[in-house]
Structure formats: structure tokens, C-alpha cells
Amino acid sequence: MSVSGEVKTVLSTDASDRITKTKWSFRELWRRYGAWGITAVNLTCFFLLWEAFVRMGFVNELFLPKASDMFAALWHGLTTSAPPGASVSGSIRDHLLFTLTNLGIGLAISCMLGIPAGLLMGGNKYVETILSPYIWALASVPRVALVPLFILLLGFTVKLQITIVVLSAIFPIIINAWAGVKTTDKSLLAAARVFGANRWELYTKVVFPFTLPFIIAGVQQGIGRGLVGVVIAEIFGGSSGLGYLIKRAADTFNSSLMYSVLFVLVVVSLGLVQATRWLESYVAPWRRIDSL
Amino acid sequence: MNVMESEPRSQLLSTSRANPLIVSKGLTVGYDLFRERQRLTALTDINLTINRGEFIVLVGPSGCGKTTFINAISGLVKPWAGSITVNGKQVTGPGPDRAMVFQDYALMPWRTVESNVRMPFEFQNLGLSQEEMDERVRRYINLVDLTGFEKSLPHELSGGMKQRVGIARALVSEPDILLADEPFAAIDAMTREAMQSEMERFVAKTQQTVVFITHSIDEAIMLGDRVVVISYRPGRIKEVVDVNIPRPRFNEDVKTLPEYTRLRDHIWRLVKEEAIQSSRGGKR
Image (cartoon, rainbow over all chains, first blue to last red; front, side, top):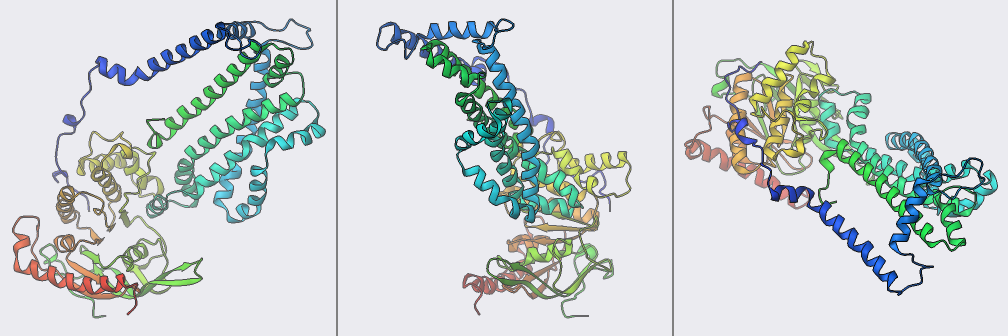
């Protein structure tokens, strides 16, 4: 049955001729890093225009501070910490840490519950039928509407923040994992079966790797929604977190502090989403979209 | 046993005696259409004996059940009635004696070329040592001329290269039977012809039994020892046509042979009748 070595190969060409290294050139550098340069110039112009706009007095600094004031407040807030024993901190760093900790714990819980739940729903018809009404009901109710209920149940505690994060983040994770399992390419499953995969191997070696990018996309959505959830919960009440700091800055007409907290939120959100994109392109390079 | 049996008369097999490998008796297979509350019979009463080393090509209109037939041989679908045996044993599920090449390649996109080719070894124990498995993976990647692309992912390859990975994966376990479901349908004409000719050559070497589906009558005549024409729903064997053209067939002259033209014309007529049925939605 075996094929002897002298069988000629299909469309013979020498493999070593087909791959050559490209040389570095200005063109190549621009193609790779040009977008970063454009972004740097673009953002610098944006902040300079902002600064000029406020300095020329088009708008009251109570509503829009100078960009330089915002960066000063940002620097101050990130480099200082509340003195030991202070009841309430005014430092962005302390509040950022608090918010990120709750977000992190909430996201971890969402992943630990949501990923297995989604995989089970995709894999088992009965689990799917039983759980899906609850999932769809909870996924479609605006989570903000649940905050007063959970304040009654849990008070202004860390548990409240984490619960809101979980409620916000878990559904996109569940639904994406579920959809990933359901949309697993039928011919990949057929191929694995033909080559002898048993049921367990079908799940671990076909369904799961196929679903992984879906799960990461779900986590990505979950991060965005979780951040919304945690900030809303903090604005509602309590004395810690970036949401609380925004509310207090607004109450005390400290616009530069307020804007610097918003800036931090944008950076945190973008950073986390970008991290999941990198993760996705690492685990699923075949799904990578170059233009995004 | 039945009228469909005939001694393969190709050059390849002129010396070997008829040696039944796949025997299908009264095979009837179908699908449950859940939404329509119907049971659709895809294939009915298929009697066919395929001998060891034979190259069988199935042709017929779209939706006539050709794929269902090779799925029944592979063990992916179970017969409703009748039986299918491979090497005298009833088919109850997939096994290492049968491998398949898919129309859409069906390569795991997260696995490298090498890892895709190695996949059959992960799922079935053929009693090979690690060195033997490594050697075979290397040998078959070389056979399909993908040496140098071992670490590439399928999305980095062209269609023809992807299908060569699919072929290497099917050959690596050195199965008795190679099932191919329109393997070259999505490949451009030039590459397709080159791959057909290579297929003829390595099948002649390995003496594998091949069941091959195609929509191309030329491909059927160039590759097949026998061409099985299947009728439109429910699929029945309409005629089994012997191809008595000596191998190797891949040279300029074959397509001008009177025998080639006659066969092409004959099969074309058979398929056309069925294609008309299929375009009328199967109403007779």
C-alpha cells in the first residue's frame, strides 16, 4: 500500500524558491508603522485645537476645561494617593484601582460561569431549551433597571458592583459561546468523524477551537458592558470608584478632574478591548481582519 | 449476484482477479427533514460491488445522492434498509480503512499543514511508532509537494494547495479505500488537470480503491475504471459504464480517441436525462 519515494510530486516547483524575504525600505516602514504616525499627529492636533478653543474663550471653563488643565489633573490624580486614614480619597489612582478590581473580579466570574454555560447550551439540546428563556429575558432587560433592586438587596457594597458587572458582562459571553458551538462548520465535524474522532474529541478538538474566537469576541463585548455597569453602579451610590469620582467632580464643579476621569475611562476601555483583539488574532489568525 | 457487477477491464487491473471490497446490497438511505415533517429518501436500492483496486466514479445531477452513497461507505450515515459491507464487514461507523477528501477541503483552520496531515493519527491508533508517524507525515507532505509549507496555516494557502493538504491527510493512514467528494470542483481548470493526472499516478502506485464523485464527465472518463450514473431523486443506479481506455490516460491524444468521444457522448446523454428531471423538481 505504501507510496515509494520516487513518485513525482504534484506541480513540481522548488519550495525554497517560493519564499523570499522582503527588504526594509521607507515604503515598508510606512506600510507597517505609518498608521501609528498619523494617529500621533492626529491626536496632538485634536488636543491643541481643544486648548486653543478654550483659551480663546468660546466656552466657559466650568463646562470644558483647557486640555492642559485636564492633563494636569490627570497627572496629579495618577501620581498621588490618599493619605493614610483618609475616609474618602480624591486620587484617581485609588478609585481606578477600586473600579478595575471590581471589574476584574466581575469579568472573571462572568467567564467562569458564562463560558461553560454557553458551551453546554450549544452542546446539549435540553440545557439549551431549559436555559434559553432566562438567558434571553435577562439579556434583553436594561441592566440599569436592576441597579435599584440590587442596592436594596446588597447595599452600597463591593458585592453590588461585582453583581452589576457580572449581570452586564455574562450574557454576551454566554450568547457568543453558544452561537460558536451552534455554528461549528459541519464539514469540519464530518472530517473529524471520518478520521476517527469520538464524541469527546469532537468537542475538544473541533468545537472548542472553533468556538474560541467567538468566546473572545463575547468577552470583548462583556468588557465594554461591564465597564458601563460598574460606573453606573458607582454613580448610583457608594464612596469609591471612578463613577463616584465623576459624580463628585461634577457636584463640586471640578471640570478638569471630571474630564480627566472620563479620559481614564476611555483609555481603560480601549486598552482592554485592544488586548482582547490581540488575543483573538493570536488564537484565531484565520479570522483576522486587517483593516480593523 | 446482480446485474451491476462487471469485471474491471482497465490496464491497471488486467492481471488481478475480481476481489470484492465494497459490497452494497439493496442500500437505501435517507434523511429526516424535521421542519417539513418528511423523510426524504436520498438513495434507494443501490446494488453495487466495488473490487479491490478499482477506481469508481459516481456522476449524476445535483442532489441525486452521490454524497450520501460515499457517506454510507464512510459510516457517517446509517442505511435505512439493505446493507453495505467493506472487506466483508458491515459498516457501522468510520474506520481507519477508509479516508475521505472533501469538496470544501475541511481543514482545521487553527492547525498547521503538518498538524492537519497528522490529525488521523491523533484520532485512531494504527499501531505505528512516533518515528513511523513522523516519517509518513513528511513523506505525504512531500508527495503533494507541500514541503516547506509544514508550518503554514490553511488560510495562507491557495485552493489547490489546500486540497493537496486534504489529500495528504487522507493518504497518511494508507487506507484501503479513498473516498473523494468532488475534490477538485473548487479548483481552477489548469491546477485541476494537473491534480487529476497526479491522482491517477499515485493511485496506480498505492493500488488504493477509490470512490470518486464528480460533476465533470471528462474527469469521470479520465479517472474511472467504471462510471456509475445515478438517477435523480430518489437516487438509483441508472447505468454502470465501463471505461476501456488504457492508462496512463493523461496525454494529449486520449481526448481524440473514438472510444473517448463515444463514452463522453453516452454518459452525457444519461446525465442529461436526469438533469432535466432535476430541473423540473423531480416530477416524472
